[in-house]
Image 1 (cartoon, one colour):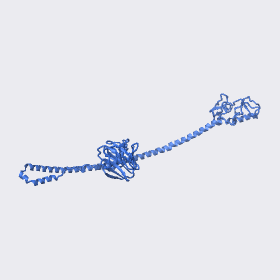
Image 2 (tube, helix red, strand yellow; image 1 turned 180 degrees about the vertical axis):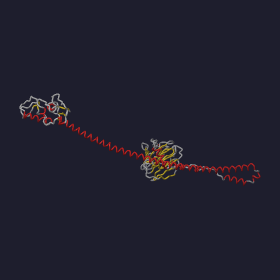
Image 3 (cartoon, helix red, strand yellow; image 1 turned 90 degrees about the vertical axis):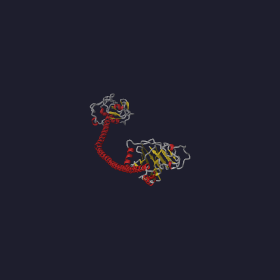
Length: 468
């Protein structure tokens, strides 16, 4: 391709020193000779000027005189069998216009439509593109090697580690479940045996009571029959002298006493008490698929004491150190002396749970009470935990305790809880206090609740909040 001779009409200057050279009648003085094409063409034009004797070249000039330093197509790596020619100038398209991104001939660059554009020899352009492709291919190859290494090494190692980790995790789960199952089975066996012993004890007591009172009944029946016979068959004279005998029989009958029901005749609920079972039951209720929660629980504004401030969302109680001068309107449901407030949810069936954020409060009570709890006055009837109508967990002066009917049960805390959860299970008549973060059971009480219960709270230091 490079061996072909391509002719072009060139108009040479009349004088080699004339600055205004003409090329096909075109002014060259204003051309930008800094472009690559002129640096290549200049050598050829100088050779023509040095060898030329005519001011005008009417003959054909070989195309390789335009650039003797340009590498051949074979050297640049172009192996196309046929070269393309410029439609306008019928010259070889051996230049590339970077402005219009197309192939051009030397005439297009000098006097044609691409005059003034950024042009480069086609060989240079192709070489740059090839070099770029080589770089891209090398980068792709390196990336492919990295991916191959990631697949062969990293993913394979990850898969092996995954299998090992999954195996260990399964073993751990099975071990934990097995330990829990074994502990539950042992606890079940222990509790069933305890219940069996308690049942046998009560049955023995019932048998003893039955035998004792059957004998007493028989004795009373005999005494009564004898007294009736004396009354109906004894002559008057003999009856008058039998007063002592009658008195002895009456005294014997009165000595039998009256039967009474005692706790010894009932099954002791403590025989089935188990911290392990209670904790697992609470965890199952609170964490199981059918977990219970009272998302709509708020404080009833009508019950809030004047000593407390209720937040706008009806969930936070704040204690006033001084009684507010603006007393709330009178309401029969409002506590007027004790810093108490009741929840808006009445509970008489089902299972309910809620959490109270006690934060840094140093004095509070959380629990439940009957709706019939007294609201007025400073007596114990309206004081949470000091009557038979309320059950609360109390924190005061650094101590925790369960309070009901004026009795306190001290509680041992491993750490000071920031939140306290409550679980009320109506079917089992169970009220449970727990620590939400660890689900540790703080206290449990079972009581035959006979009326609707309401959440109850009191605070005399900082604030407490119902969480949802």
